Each structure stands twice: as C-alpha cells, then as structure tokens.
Image (tube, rainbow, N blue to C red; front, top):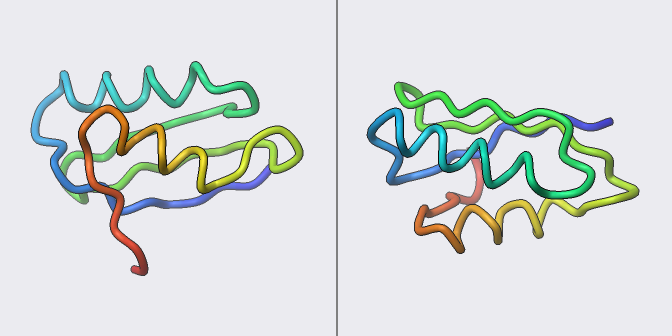
Length: 71
C-alpha cells in the first residue's frame, strides 16, 4: 500500500469532503481516503498494483475539483 497527500482546490464544505472521499473509495484499489478541508488536502491510501495515482487525480478532477501539482 502507498499513501499520498494531494493538494485539492475547491473543497469548501462537508458535502465536498464526502463527495471526494466517496468517489475515491469507489475506485478499486483505494483503501482509504481522508479529505481535510482546512488544509485543502486529501490523503489517499491505495494499492499501486491496482490503481495509479494519475487515475486517482483524474477522478477528483472529474467531479469538479482541481488537483494541484507539487507541494
């Protein structure tokens, strides 16, 4: 398992948090997703053999949020 912290722009409420976490948890290979509104970050734990980080980022962007590159 691998964990990554992604900077995500546009999350502003509990609905946003639930939407991002729910979307990520539906992806096969994602074990855990935790969105932090105050830090504008999503911590995601996933199996690299089942899903790539770029696919996870794409899913977040598909529901209307921006994933920022870099720290």
